[in-house]
Image 1 (tube, rainbow, N blue to C red):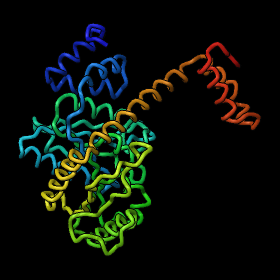
Image 2 (cartoon, rainbow, N blue to C red; image 1 turned 90 degrees about the vertical axis):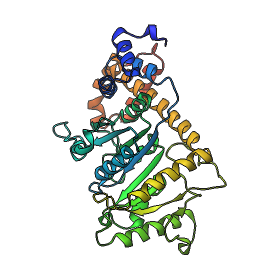
Image 3 (cartoon, one colour; image 1 turned 120 degrees about the vertical axis):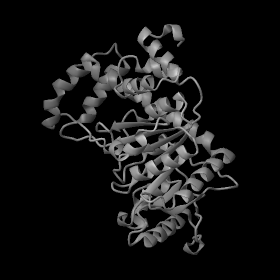
Length: 358
């Protein structure tokens, strides 16, 4: 789509966005987040270049100190004179539909920094730790030119796996109260973590949890527990994240060793080691070719998401589909039909518009 084909409001917003206006960035994110008219046009115009930002995702259970750790990382990057974008996702109330957006409140100190842009998003009922349009919002902030983006998930624990489709590096944050490493392994966190952090490590049980996570990592990777390194990390070459694609990552001569680190984010303890681990992972991504693989897999997910959402909009706005659904509800409730038989009839309508069944 050429720029001349864009509607005047979208073209004006895109011009101001590309000129680096923060207000235009905020309005663009709102446009995308609400999926308002013109949002697809805008994304098509804004995402015309390859992604370049270093994307770091932080996930973990509620109360793990994710927001505090994000704020500490942002402060360190600002000391290096790097501009930073932050996307923080908060849960939506199932009753009011609103969100407290507490992450923004906890990051109030860094929010006043002109070199930092923070966007809080509500999940709006979406599962997986992110809002429905979080990936698009991250893409928009990348296109705006932030060299580093931090993405904090909602903190729902065992289902926060969508972060793998938005970040290059995933940091899983646990606290001594999180439970043992085996439970974390059951939650699926072993598959998505590039770095493990035991935060609030000044509390009792931190050393035990650190050891259990390292042992669990070794068990998953097929290495004996005696191979657990004293400090740096665990060889996790056999089990790489599969959430991004249906295929396992190709074997490489230099596998990433997942660090398991301790921090006390509120005091900055362990932060230098975490920064070093994040930089080390980025180097590994570049040198191993894994970054390109993850970006390609992420692109495939994004295309599927676009098609899925478009198909849902088409399906549930079709008047013939609405008629079939309305007429079938009583039969489904009474056991005369099943959701599968009704779904099949709806698919027949959508896939072959010349056939109309009622």
